[in-house]
Image (tube, rainbow over all chains, first blue to last red):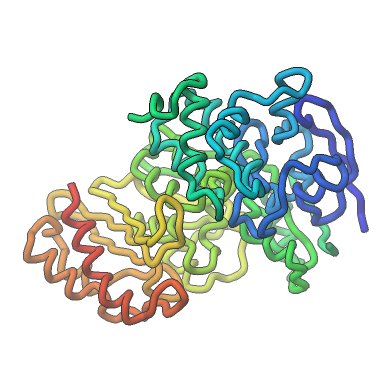
Length: 166
Length: 260
């Protein structure tokens, strides 16, 4: 099986790895790069658990060919807390905790990345915009309300989730 | 994962490789083909990637030309393509729209194909990498195996409307979707296209006939709604039965025509 060398930026760090023919980005991140935060859910691009950011835009790692990220920037949940220095939770992660937005937690990493992409381009989203932004992420526990409230709270700078409602 | 990946810097090289290798598939956005790769589909053993900038180009004038590799996200965000944004936003969720392409949508199995339906309504022509041109309406009926380099269509002079009918919002598979091109002032062709009412996007010819030249006339709209499913063979699947689709096609067409 052919191996293809690629280089990419992984949560701010330069990485160079060999990818297998046909290997998907999720498999490469988890097995080769050792980042277990993107989750394997459906493996067919339906559930959103494997959401990562490629050059800032949300993508499903399980249906992305690994070698297409050569030269690009990959951000995952592993970089959210690290980005705060010393492993403190990011404001978005803290808002998820405060709002009990994780139950089993399997969808959480994908939810966090979809919400991160939203807040980067739209720091004060409406409730409808939050719903749209996480529409590609399935959660079978929370009924979504707690997650939506958490994103709105993070957007409003940590105050009440109600503050973000329009 | 015994799938080789070949990357080509020009569309013509990619087309030659695709033509000469029956076991190759195109990796455009990857959202469909990667499912098959992940499942170990052995009906193909090679993916062809295209990095030609022409494949990603958009040009907007009296004619609109979209490279096959233009994504739904790019269309949704493009200032001069606002009329197509509702179609682009109906495809997948945000993560899928980041990568899903125009050319990929033309070959997407049902219930997908919202952009394909819209392009049929707009009278778009597909241009293959070898320079052949054929109407998207023909291509979706079972295309000759071809690499679609771009699609082109005249900027709509009339009213272009689109609706996706789904039980789950904001993201759910479509029971059907409807794209309508309604000429202004009585001149030009009326085109009504359903996705979900056949094995591929299909024109509702009887409804078009009822509406020709008078798409805002309530009696014409009523006649079009009654004739919406005439001659069509709706999908019969887990999302909805063919009977149900036949029953509601006219209802949704009427709502679309009466909107605004």
